Image (tube, one colour):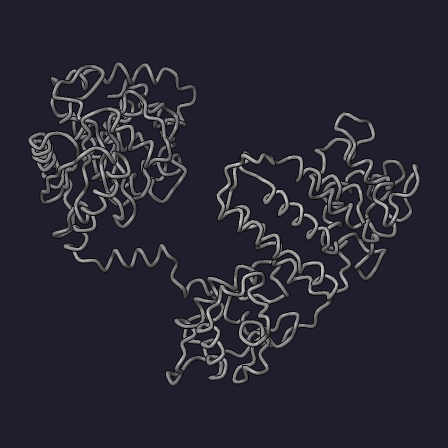
Length: 610
């Protein structure tokens, strides 16, 4: 039946998209969109066969894929439009549950004015029975006729219309209106047990308690390991649908104990008996296979066979805690990358850094030839003259030696595994490309000529800088000072954890500012004073973002120096450690210095930054 809600939604799908024949959608994407449209065809048949969860899985899979494709508005052609219309029709075919879908909307948005305590318009919506009585304007709804149902007219009325409901709240979302409209179009059925019960609290489904789960631990005789051979498939494929508060088919695989608990369809896993285990039918024997819903190729046959053999051998557990999430047994891609990096030798890591530097440079400046210099701690790379790179490398090693002498590292540990890459660009444009290409198009303020980027485990570790020359001024550092400041920042943030800009840049300038006759360093107090004069709330002084990029270095240097006078370098190191784990800078400051951020900031401002 084509009713008002469905019509509006389908029309919005059609006319809200570009259908220009000039749309620049890739042929491969068009082909995929057409294929996704075809995948929706069985949904209506599934609904008729009461295979509701399977139908929902297909719809969810296709919605997820549309989000992944992220097709621009001006590229949405007829293949996209056809898919969105077919998707909406498929969603409309799914029966709407009053208790699960309609009642929560009524409870959240309507009960406040139409409940037991307040009955605006003599209408009560606190029970299904009361809804059926209607109010002073007549019946609330007409089953199978949403177009002429009073509730639909009210919730779809314009925002400024006196009749619009909710009267003093935001309009219901399109999805909420669609749910109510489809429920009415389907007959406005009640799927609870007691029409007099509070709305949403009367589900028919009252499941008997499931029997206790018996977990048998592995004894070493198994040929299939649950942890290594079965869990990866379950975690990476199956738990997408079978986890959370509302798992598909009532079957939750979040923990091992839940895995052995039956779902709505009965005995999912029967230890020792794969023939009686419903999961084996779903992933290995049914023709066609039904799981994973909508993408049966996600599970390889070898994985399904391993699952079958594991069940046949008794479904033993070789983990440590059957109540813990299975995710803990299966390393993520990030876990695997961390393990890979940790296992690499120093030689391999150095080779990786060189290859990484060349790869990053090609992304940033593919037409610019680059040369390099490798030292003990640095890999200097760029399009400056070779003699200049040699000079930068010499300056860099001198600064690293000064830093490691002043702030010693444990044992023979080096500051950065595989060296720190130092990219040197001879033009401003080439430096700005690092921000544009590698930092998601981040704008580069004119006063910024370098930055650091260090990730945990030294997956990436580099400095990028513009060779600004050998003369400094009140407004800019020279190349040696800039390099020294950036190296100090990289040394402070060598763990890869994020630190506030004021601390990183402040520490960097402090370490690079030993030359008292530098006009740039001499001008810092005046620049900082101008910035501090704009601070209305001292408590925000330690928060990232309080100062503009061109201001934060000057304020940060004076603030860092002030904090050192309050507790020396040990306290500053303690603060840096706290800021790596505590996102709230105020709490980290108070935990380290025993004063609130506002008190410490006020003392700093009153001291004039000294």
